[in-house]
Image (tube, rainbow, N blue to C red; front, side, top):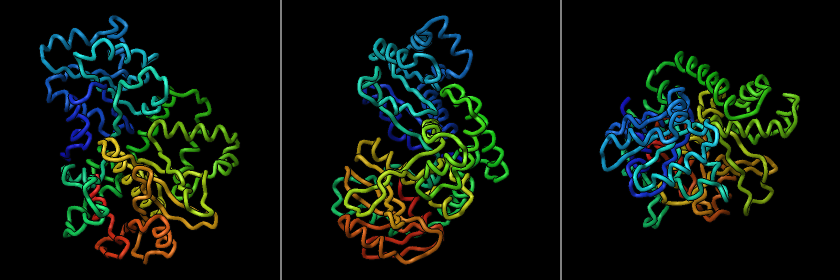
Length: 413
């Protein structure tokens, strides 16, 4: 598989336009290291990649706190790029980075990658405030897997009078889109199992992945001692995908406190195992206001087909909304709508704080529900997209589209 990651098409390509360090975060094995190493090699800075998981890099630091400087100056290049991987596992790492940036801001460009939520640094008074720009690299999207240039996709340009999503799909459906979608649905968007192309390998990879997270990342970054119950919680969550998550129910299953369950779920989010979607309550009568829905970055962990498909769509919409936001186009947020009487809409995309489009994920072709139509009208006649796992469906309705997932997902980042 040879595809250019979108992070390379905007974040890395524009690194020289900004004075700040570049932070690239996302799940383990989603391609961060590969993208950064390729960028360094292209700019003849391949010797300036340092992984803080390795004893060698830590030993370099103990001998000389600015160990990279002599190597960088020895390259005798005008543009020097230095990458630190998993630096957040080092003690006082924020102070290290602050010192590096303040000392070498005008000489070197720093790229920092990590599989933990470095964006949690965005708080008032943090020592790195104003010193970094954050980008997220998630597993492959369909358009990225098809090696579609980012410039050809819908990027929500402000000059469009109509909702630009509605104009992206008047194209002939391509066989390669469906074939690529089937691979994503079956094997996840993570590069290694996707490249291997075998379900048996996926299962082995998943087991190794969890072992790695629990034996290294959770050990290094948390104080959790009850790893057995933590792993049990992780194994219970796939059955909860698609519904608002009840902490009380999980608390009863595991016989631990409400606070403990909440903290453990936050750990999964911090380590990019799961992500949450908040309920939208504004202007929606009798709406749920507190319970979040949780999804996996690896949707193949979900066994129920309907929930698995919803998880895939959630991941793709989240990914697209992050790219639009991180490119500086719009402020976006992904939500869902559910009322007390259990009427639900899978996803609502907010743009600049305002409702922009509604999304339903369905396995098979169904008519648009009255609740969906009424909610669209209530929110300002915003478009509806009923996205189907079923292939070869494309129906225009006055409020939007009923469309196969491969056709829809091939046109968003």
